[in-house]
Length: 438
Ligand SMILES: Cc1cc2nc3c(=O)[nH]c(=O)nc-3n(C[C@H](O)[C@H](O)[C@H](O)COP(=O)(O)OP(=O)(O)OC[C@H]3O[C@@H](n4cnc5c(N)ncnc54)[C@H](O)[C@@H]3O)c2cc1C
Image (tube, rainbow, N blue to C red; front, side):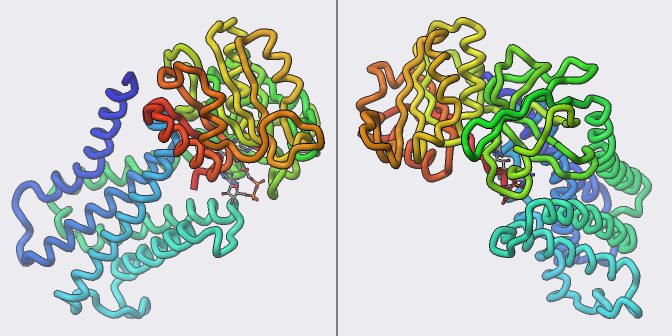
C-alpha cells in the first residue's frame, strides 16, 4: 500500500512528459493549410517523438522512479511503449503517404530535401531498434552488441527525428512553441548526457576493489567487493546492482546481479554468479585486487517492504542469491519470525550455500526444505519439482498471512505462483524476481 502514492505520482509525471508536447504544440491557433488528415498525422508524429524521448527516462534507472514498480516492470513497460511509439511513427508516415504523397518528395537522398531524408533515416533506425530488440535471441545477437547498437540507433534515430521536425517547421514556428520545442530537445540531450557520461563518471569516482573470489559449486562463484574511499551503497536485502568488472563504466559492459550479502554491510557486498555465458564464465578467473564498479541498488524484491508475521522463500538454483541476502540480513537483525525456505536444485552438488544455510538455522527460526530433481541414492528429502502438493504439505497453517518470495527459472516461478494461487494465498503476497530484464 505504501508504494501506491509514489507510483501514482510517477505515472502522472510520465503522462505529463508524454502529453505536454502535444497539448502545448496544439494549443492556440493552427497554422494554415493543414487540413484534418495532415493535422492528425502531425499530432501522431509529435506523440511518437514525445514517447520515444521519454523512453530514455524509463531506462535511465532513476532510483526513486523505479522504486515503487521495480526496475523489471519499468523495462517491460519501456518495451511495450517502444512498440506503441513505433506504431505511431508508422501511422504518422502512413497517413501522409495515403492522403498527401506529394509532400513526401523524392526518396533519393541526393535529390530529396535534407529534413525528409532525416525523417526516413529516423524511421529506418527505429525499424532496426524494434526488430533487433524483439527478435534479439532468434537473430543470435550477443547481448552486449545488441545493447550498444540499441543505444546508438536510438540516439541517431531521435536526432534525425528532431532534424526532421525542425525542417518541416510546422506547428513549432510560433516563438512560444519553438521555445518549448527547444526545451524538449535540450531535456532529452541532457538526459542522454547524464545517463551515458555523468553517471559512468560518478561510478568511476566511486570504485570497488575485489577482496575475495570463492567458488560455491562447480559452476557458481561468489565475488566480494569492498567500497574504496567511500561508504558503499545502502541497499535493502533482495535488491540488485549492475556490476562492471574488467571494463570502464563507460563501456556498457555491466551485468545485473542480486546482492547476496547482508544489508548490514553496505561497504562490502557479495554477488553469487552462475557461470553460464560470455561474461559470467570469466568470473572464476577474477582475482582479488581487481577494480569493480557498481550501479545500484535497484529492485522492489525486498522483505523490508512487508510487515508479515513470517516469510516463505522459494528458490531455484542461483535464484537463492537475493534470498540469501534476506536471510543474512534477518539473521544480523536477530529477527525472531518463522521462515521457511524451499530450495530446488537439479542435483545435491549444485546446492549453493549448503553449509552457510545450515549455519543460519542456528541464528534464525528457519526451516529448510531441499528439493532435488535428481536425488542421490538414499536421499530422504523431497524430490522432483516444487508442486502444489509439496507446498500444501510444507506450508504452515497461517499460510495466508505470510509473504512469499520466489526467485528461480521462469517455469519454476510460474508453477509456484499457480500453486500458491490454487492454495488460496492472496496474489498480493506473492513476489517474484526473474533474472531476465528483456
Ligand atoms: C535483476 C537480475 C538479477 C540477477 N541476479 C543474478 C545473480 O544473482 N546471479 C546470477 O548468476 N545471475 C543473475 N542474473 C542474471 C545475469 O545478469 C545474467 O546471467 C548475465 O548477465 C549473463 O551474462 P553472460 O554474458 O555471462 O551471458 P550470455 O550468454 O552472454 O547472456 C545470456 C543472457 O543473459 C542476459 N544478459 C546478458 N548480458 C546481460 C546484461 N549485461 N544485462 C542484462 N542481461 C544480460 C541476456 O538475456 C542474454 O541473452 C540476474 C539478472 C537480473 C535481471
